[in-house]
Image: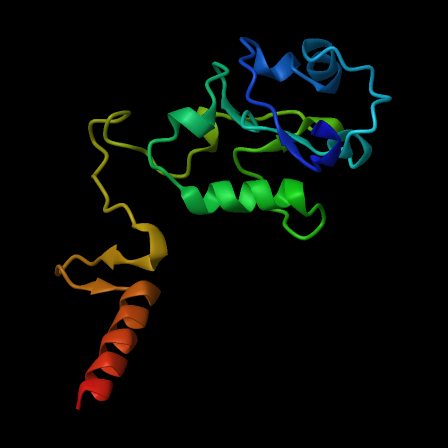
Length: 157
């Protein structure tokens, strides 16, 4: 069955994910590398430890907001090398990719939990919907929904 698998997502627990590489993967699964498995010949073995904190916490589990759109783009980058450049969550250990470490000093905003003088800001929702200061919602998702409702209303008339 493994012979027909083109891409494998390895979710093996690694207490030190930065040192878990393709050699460690092959050792874990007792592979020599000469097996005729599609994921070996195409060099596509993904892991969800592509972005880590400085303490080796996986962003996949520790991110403060769920971002399925980032997960899709991150996996698409592994599935279709060269088409997608945004790296998030996933890394391809068969292509010798190391985890990207997200450092505190790379944060663009200061959160109130980190600095008592920082002001809380609205968090944009998926789909481009944002809450404006006056309570109005705007964004591409609202526009698309409005157009769909208008189309349904036109059909009803």
